[in-house]
Length: 203
Image (cartoon, rainbow, N blue to C red; front, side, top):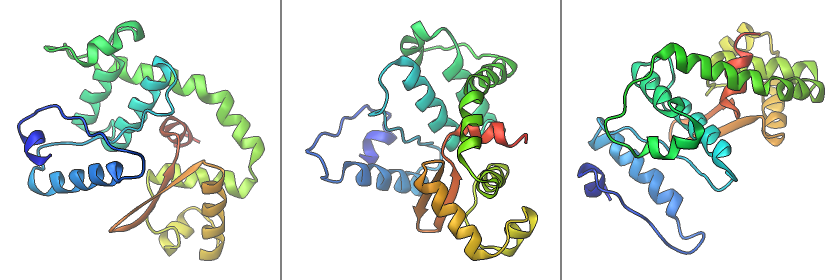
């Protein structure tokens, strides 16, 4: 698999369920980060996508998590995703010689997505306690939090004690509003919806 990636060859991995395809893929990504840092990886589970709009949203979220728009590569990838109409997006993705799109148009597309989701975000506000909502904002402003009990994080956002922070994180994870991604470095918490996260950064 490493050789296929290094040679820029397509590959399809097929097996029965629960045979370790996802684990093998993520292990491959770890190996690539070590031996081929010039190769950038994006993991995307499209099982939940039911239409092209769902696919676009999932692809955008996965891309923004892997390459933040503030970086040059993030800007280029987001321009790639949001270029062209949805009708021709699939053709765009696999086309060669794609023309770059101005980053301002990309930002505008992201603004539209955040605007479309605002009603949903405000409904979440009604579902949560003040502490849960403020905690979600705190995580969004940090982008990703690996040490949710660290005194610096607790003081900066006036969260309270480490036990309070853990309770809030657990509750928001149960509601599906926070992701807890575990790795060898520990567990990192981030807002599940990347567009909601960027929207909350402004609050």
